[in-house]
Length: 272
Image 1 (tube, rainbow, N blue to C red):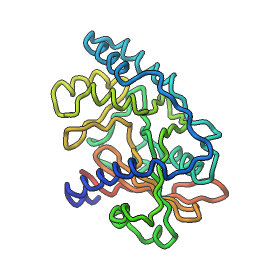
Image 2: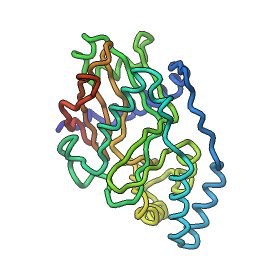
Image 3: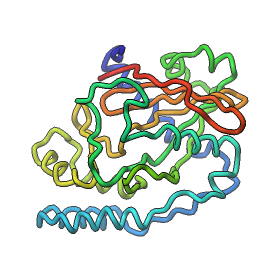
């Protein structure tokens, strides 16, 4: 398992992904729009968290997560099935997302993995996918792709409000819409190394395992593995997923045969 080249490359990747999320929001022309509207504001959610924590009230925290689960539903079948590429993204994610079976996706250092004994799984709010011609798909490695992300001829798309229908063991699913992402980050504070932040993390842990950033100053709110982006060949018959799993990452390859996607290989490729 190879380490990332250096901290500069890690920062570069983060900046590029943020740029993509900002710049690609209008790239994907959807025939059917997602109709999500928040029921509560960031301020209201933050107030609920602060009250539960100040009273050390685990029941109130459980209610917070249970209401989150009940109030935000998956994307509709109509939305998911509106095109071959969007349908493929959801099918691939469902096949790939294995938060309770990390060994299915590679060999990992257990110390760096999310705990899997929490009641809820938090799903990332967006998915970036890239269409490549067959030659690029077969020859470009991760670093080649990262270097080319800012080129105009690269077909990069974003699905926002990503809420795939999932059933995973006995876990409940939470979709990380913006108001929840903001309220949790504000509650925890941006410095994940602070003692008070760690106490808050322990308060959450029976319900959701929130991972501190390896370098401090931030949190991984979604439950890993987290997709950085999905690469497709131009005929949408092959795919590669570049992903993060705790403080490590890897690549999963898939092929489409008889209308079904299948994982052909998955391995770890880097560690922080």
